[in-house]
Length: 114
Image (cartoon, rainbow, N blue to C red; front, side, top):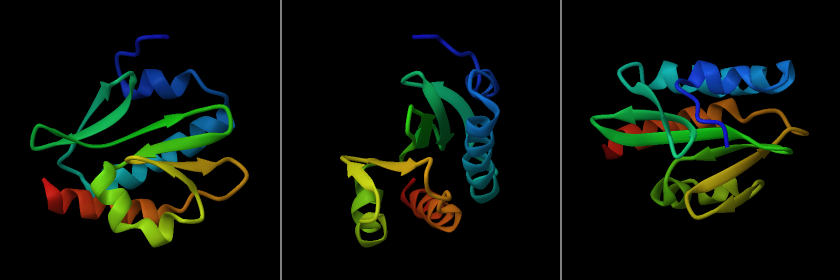
């Protein structure tokens, strides 16, 4: 596993079409949480707020992984039902448009928890 020093370095490792999706997720998070700081945690892009992990995201072979914590996953359970989910994670397949509005609302929700 490559150890990245920044989110920019992480994103740069991917082909252009995947970089575009990662940049979109990053932009949504930055827009909703302008005071959050960027980091690499668990080897993937992370935004921290008030010293705590706010959300993580990452690219995989067939999807963008988004990690808003189990509590957020439960709060948006109905809206996330269209996607493959796990404990605190959701997979946004490359074959579907990114649900920008949903990501935005999840980030806002997470901000209210910190």
